[in-house]
Length: 309
Image (cartoon, rainbow, N blue to C red; front, side, top):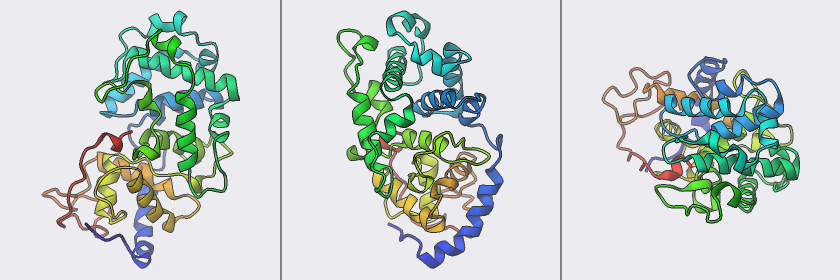
């Protein structure tokens, strides 16, 4: 297992990562679900579309974008108003045939039904999240735990019927949208949603005002894992919450106020296959050339569901 960078090494790494960040910090730098969220001007619509988009942000980008487009088409021009008025029995037919990998039409109905209950109780997803937050905590771990617990305690019977579909590994149902750090999950999609809502730059939307960007945790996916290990940002070999916090801790030493600013660039660098981690070309094509050790004998992280959950 590789050692993480020392503080001195990280200081030297910052100019390279800052250049990479600036390379990607414009609206259409790469195909990404946030482009669909950005179409909406109203904060309430961005919050609702953002949560739905992040919830199904797993799999190939083209497939993810198609599924988000279908959900947006159903919700119409005012997604927040649609969700506030959502009735599962009335709207179920519009979702017939919706499938995104293991997410079914019933799961999509359940997601919007839970979001409607959040809005009814708290007025916004942000307030529902903040209601379970502990502002004194260093990051959002406790808030995420409580957010998912409270979301899954809301009614789901009207979405699934009298007998809610049991959660299985191949069909995890509503629970897949609300993972918990205590289960070991990296909570990638929830952290992605938080990044979109909390941060503000040319990419992220800055819709929320009550959670600070310094407390965010990196959305851990296959690409961030690969580049993060290549750069020595983590001590861990297996994906999950510990690795997500470890990579974030390394990035926080570079930018304590905004550690997750580098996430988009690191992720899309990996998606472009420019990273040389365990690849024959090593780092010949990588913008981070010279900052990493792609030829080392580092064990490839296993593809566990928690890397995307």
